[in-house]
Image (cartoon, rainbow, N blue to C red; front, side, top):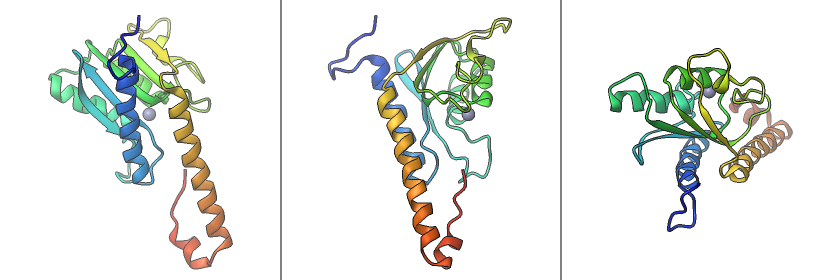
Length: 178
Ligand SMILES: [Zn+2]
């Protein structure tokens, strides 16, 4: 049963809100807005947001950054007592890292039909045969998470359109690719 906080939000919603706050940091950098927090014994011990473009590495996904920080904090590669909150269904790399870290519980905002590995394309988090399977909650503040993605891509399209219609100089100065 979900615990309701004084704020009127469940505990899961409260942590997802913080993951959304992280996603907004990515957005402010022009990155796809994806955020993540890891909770241990009722406390957020690690946060992460997508930094793929600014860090110039495909490894800089929100979850990988947060897992790295949480491992450092706990002093172990296993994150057995942790819950991970992610605004978007994880990709194969991050779902793999979650399984490798033995994270028992994964809370997801919205699904990612083109790349998600918590049931959309594959289900790496609950794969028969692996030695670890996660408990997965989906759709926590899902509307907000999904709207954030839609708004980001709409703005990107509009920006791209404006630039195509604008001068060659402004089109050349835009380096946005997804
Ligand atoms: Zn990922």
